[in-house]
Length: 110
Image 1 (cartoon, one colour):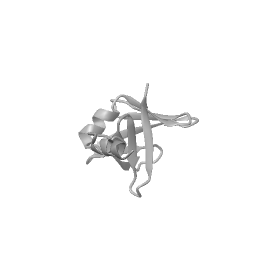
Image 2 (cartoon, helix red, strand yellow):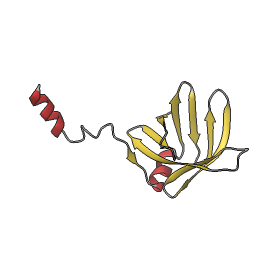
Image 3 (spheres, helix red, strand yellow):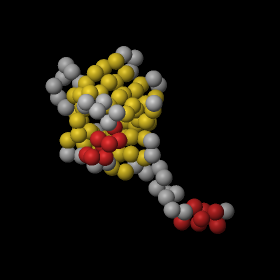
């Protein structure tokens, strides 16, 4: 068993496979533009290249999105306040991190 543990410890990428890495502004644009994220339980969001976003959680909601200083930002009318989040990625999972450290994970879907 000890030999097996040592092999895994030195296998490249094994320990970092589950780690999230922060995305830059350009990486956020590339990752989200034209994509759909599935948040589970029938909740999803699309990110149009035109910077419009659609969110569905029982009923649709339309808003706008932007990237500002390496952060994803969204605006949901009737509010005129932008909410911004740090964005991290691990494989097909995108994680949004708010200013209090709370996270929301979405998985790329068709």
